[in-house]
Amino acid sequence: MAKILSIGAGVMGTAITVPASKNGHDVTLIGTHLDKDIIQSIKDKNIHPILNVELKNTHAKQIDELLQSDFDEADVIIIGVSSAGVDWYIDLLNKFKAQDKKFLIITKGLYINDQNSIDILPNKILGNIPYNIDITAVAGPCKAIELAQQYITNICFINQNIDTANTLAELFKNEFYIIETLTDFVGGEFCAALKNVFAIMVGCSQTCYNDQIKIYNPESGIFTQCIKELAQIVKLHQGDIFTAYGLPGVGDLHVTSGTGRNGTLGKHFGEGKLYSSIMKNELLGQTVEGAQLILDLQVALNAKFESGFLNKSQLPIFYELIQAISKDKKLYIPWEKL
Image (cartoon, rainbow, N blue to C red):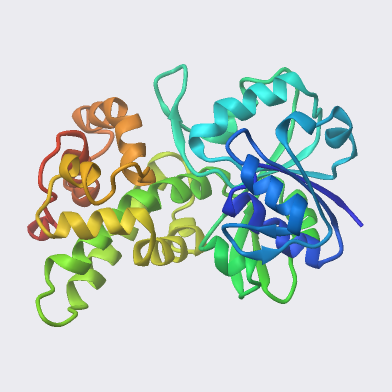
């Protein structure tokens, strides 16, 4: 029996522990300062109040109950926070010690590093703690509620050392959690983050051409072009284009564009609305990961287009998404450039 420590008790940070506990492993679930009510519910009833599932073999703790011994005894530590919580997680790893421990990161996002380049979040973590840890990324299509309810979910564990990815996969995989192992760490992380951006355009195509009946042809064309552009961006950042055509790209974009906030934003774009209006009305108070990523990276992205590193003719959809969100323009679908 392995010991799993998951820090972050949101839907995904919790859902990923379900296959591990089903396999008989011992899970300690730590809530952040935002998860106090969730942790109390689990302590009282063994029920996650959002996922509405019973959590077995799971010990819930508030963040102020976290001990060094929790790190020392853990075989795997899960980074279960959102991209906005990564700096908080880094501070936590500087407060405690997890030297040479194996980590799983489910956080999706990119950041600007000290060289003003777009980089993956695991590198941000590794560069801001005084010791080494071994991070494996989780990528691919996964709706937390479906995984928590033990519906078949097919994803990837990605580590540059395939043996490490395989070792961790053995702890989690079972009849409903199907795990493919890969070594393309950069490609997997770029796909995981940017699929949220492209899902906005797919969502736009789902409403832009509909009147009384559902129209499918435009969406199919847009989806295909989004994958082509995702593969191009992955290649430019030294990743493997085949990752974009696999579960981290095609699979994740498919599940993300059909549901969730990114697709919903796109649907409102398809109705001719502006980003500022949508966020003040239909999506008031919500964080749309793909849009937030563009806003966080807009200076670097615009510089890459101006320098020619990113080519407008090769990435027309990506370019139009950046324009619509960073400059608050109507989202244009550039059919003539596809």
